[in-house]
Image (tube, rainbow, N blue to C red; front, side, top):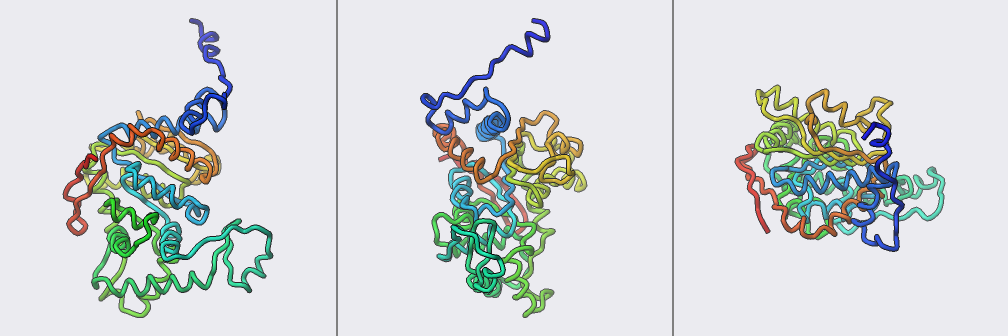
Length: 349
């Protein structure tokens, strides 16, 4: 077949919504369309591949105001149904999750209100979401008080969030579900959030050198051990920022520490609205990451440029319909002794 015939061999297939009704059927039909629908189908395909690979430990990087935006249970379900093994999140998403676990809420902004008036009313705005600022202040104090109940020693953010998870009763909490499932949560920017504000208040009242403190270098050591023990790793990024970079930097961290047998992440998907030409990490392509050795040369990867509040629930809903796939995937159980990861067990259902 000559090159022209080869390039013109596969026809665009128009979506038939009278036949394709389920989310996974629609996403599969996107494979023969164009633009971001096809990219979403590619992400769905890669997601299924990483879930099928028994060797893969899946790291999920979460940034953006996803919990205030209504994605809380979607993220919780990723943990509850063993679709991810390790969560790396901004502090804000974890703060808002804990906020809701205490019975507080975020609200739909049904009308435009001048932001100066909102300040007078003590209502905080996150684009088209409202929240009660006075309740945020109360929540900050909760974190300050909680730190006072812990041992007077350095904690990694993983250890701290594990202890916090013990206190959560809300069944749809991200932090609470991660504790119950044994899923480690890392928050390398925990200080840059309401959690950090509360912990700062605690440390301001007490000498941080002689009591509780978050040691982020312990986080580096702990997450590196997960990759070191993994036979291979996969990544799923929502947005970019610190969570994405934190997971990406595992490979050079392994090399600096003398471990050279890790070839970068083998599977990779990302949902982003950022453009690579501005040079920021949130829009950075997986191809660029290969130059750093962060993504394997042979990685199965895909990126979709779409609002995460649209793309993420569609991907998760489609996977939820792949019931046999989810039944077969084993839960990863991490056996820790302090900051030492002793073993990663595969727990079949």
